[in-house]
Image 1: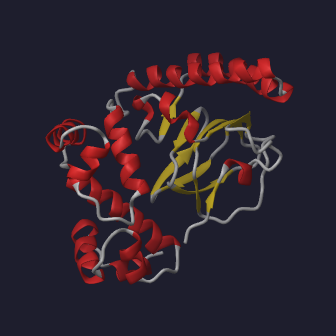
Image 2: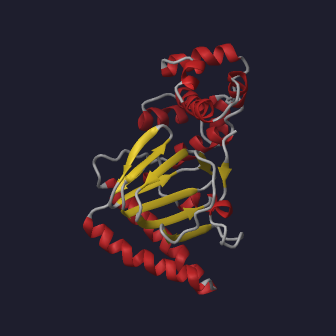
Length: 271
């Protein structure tokens, strides 16, 4: 299976009880990790200087000055960057899901303008200094600072016409439930019950924000996970079918080809 890292796996010098990390790109731990890999946390990486590529779930994004990447839990990523690359890193565990603005969900990168960059640099440097102080007052300042930063990024993203986001907390929870239950075959009605809404209301929200039915969203999430496992692991097609909630590997293969135009074996051979 794909290697999945926690915050303490990546920031080895950090106390294990910490639920977040704030630091500069160049001063952050660089532990030995498997490539590609995924995380169980949210990471915000702002490259103030540098070049290269960041591949996130099969999409290739250019690393360039003042580009901020927002990577979600479970996403597979791999990057390469030039020597002398600088920037900032913020890592947040699932504790912060309740304060993460929905406008930032589904956004992979944001290009910050000069005014925003000039504002954020001293602000983040101050948070990093508070992180190093490691006392109770600094902890409160950092927590409030992270909330402020998230909402400022949210405001910036809503002003960017090329950024598409969703604005429904219910759909964020729906997406998380699907990912957490990826190996199970759960009905739309069951998901709606877990979200404390009707199946009709869930369908209405999915149509409004995704222009898809709940069943299509569930299936697309399963296919995305199947692509990750096919490309990045040595699991058999039968094992991957089972891991993504398909009891019949033949049915899985037919659905996968309908969605991707490739058979699972053909897709696996492209890596």
